[in-house]
Image (tube, rainbow, N blue to C red; front, top):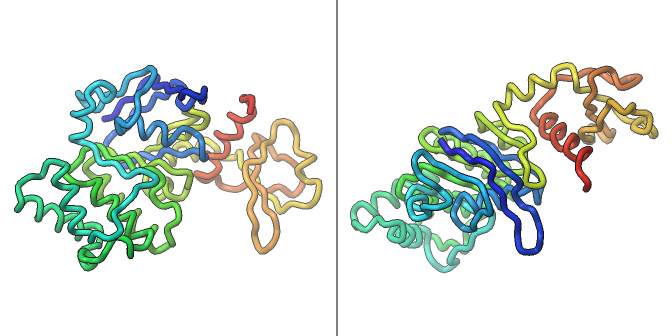
Length: 294
């Protein structure tokens, strides 16, 4: 169990990146949703011991994450949003080097660990291929391979599927699902679909604050009877009452379709629809926007 309580961080330029974040994260996949600039990466870097917090506590079982950084690093696997690779080195050689840095010093154990992870991430057949020739999805799978060295108990992946094509995204999500059976895995993303497909628990954050957290299906059920849909005509949104909130719009066969949050029918020709996780996400953000000064 990872317990985060009242975690705060303000940068030197005055940006309040984290404002009293409190989360309880059990074994399995935990989705951390939020728009760009919400504070997700700041939280991930703090948990990964890459930056100091100003206040708060973080405990992973009996490890004080903020104070005992060396203990955290021994049980941590981290895949940042952006990471560099040596383009002229092959995958097997570089992963073996990373294994040495992780403390796997026995040559036989290191070789077995590298082979196992390359097979797990479906990279064994290209193990002698230079990393500079890897596709985006192959690079992400190599990134998770290095994050899994030494059997980490806490794994952090930051925006892992951004830019991947559908096939690569599917392979990567399937891999994360396997990993989440035996470790705490935090998936930080702005893509609702990733959380919907993978995560047993989730939280939405914005401007460094937790807006909502819980079990996705339960959060969805709380919006039953409160989501409405309509194909828009000019001026439709201008007539929405104060108790109605525009959650999102999308195109359907060239027509703009709106999803509205409202406890009652917001107007003529609106139809009730079943809520989904995107509605949970946008409801949390719109409520927060209405009460913030941005």
